[in-house]
Amino acid sequence: MGSNLVITKEIENYINNHSLELTEVQKEIISYNNSLGDIKRMQISISQCHFLHLIVKISNTKKILEIGTFTGLSGLTMSLSLPSDGQLVTLDKNAERNKIAYNFFKKAKQEKKIKTITDSALVGITNLKKEKQKFDLIFIDADKENYKNYYNQSLDLIDKNGLIIIDNVLWHGEVVNEKNQDKLTAIIREFNSFINKDERTENLIIPVGDGLTVCRKL
Image (tube, rainbow, N blue to C red; front, side, top):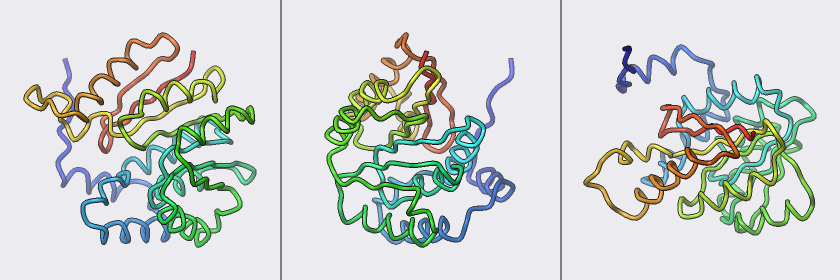
């Protein structure tokens, strides 16, 4: 039986250096985030940028909902992968970070494709449901306490074969550390078990970045 490769920092750098090169604005966002201190951990990894780029392309996605904007790296990555008539709606309650993200979107000439909504994610999702909006792909990367709520609500916003992608599902590897019983780790563990047993979707955890779960609605 084959085993998975342990991804060291050196291998990660090699992979990034031999994959699709990021745009200058994507690199600028990463550089900006590196100046923010510990909060930069909220950014997706470069390998996740590559993954999101390809999955948007190969799934022929045209409309995306992002739950959790931060400073715009994931949103910009997915928008750049969309066709010229594609759209990305991104939700975040932090007005200051939304402004920063919008400025990056504009600098990358993507602002016409992207609609930024400043509101609680659950309120924003409820409003989108009232408007009977539908999406091809939903990317969840927000507060972990509401992951199950976001996932359940998202199922109403996609049709059969629609995709839901969730970040941080391996939680820095702590999901397998039985000694770690802190609140957020327990929430992620319970969420992963819930997804795995959910008969409304089929799912796969991909060990890229901090772990991505990809779900397809059945």
